Image (cartoon, rainbow, N blue to C red; front, side):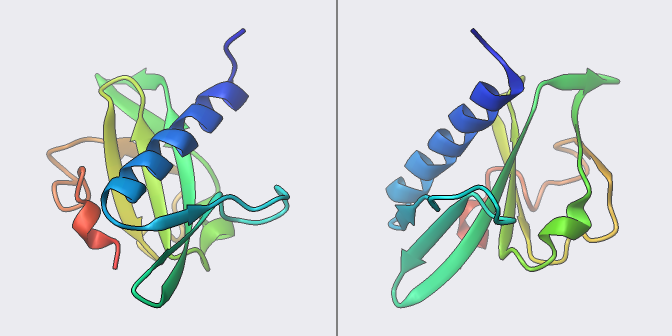
Length: 119
């Protein structure tokens, strides 16, 4: 049975695997009352990560709708375009004030699959 919950969990696991490949240790919080899905650690640095997945396409690009202000204190928001199998990595504050984001590789070239943004 497929749902937005399993889509989200699948995206979180895929992001965790990619972070592991980039040398980060990954932990999952025990509760879901946090604005983040993952806690990551590398070289003495602890960071928080929120993962959002999208499967709704509008004008040939995946769209994610969320109140991104809720994640204002999260270090990184990683958006997973499940249609194109792409990841967009946004740093703290980049999505503040947004309620919708269209994952367009031409508009977000700096964020597209750029795992080096996570420091």
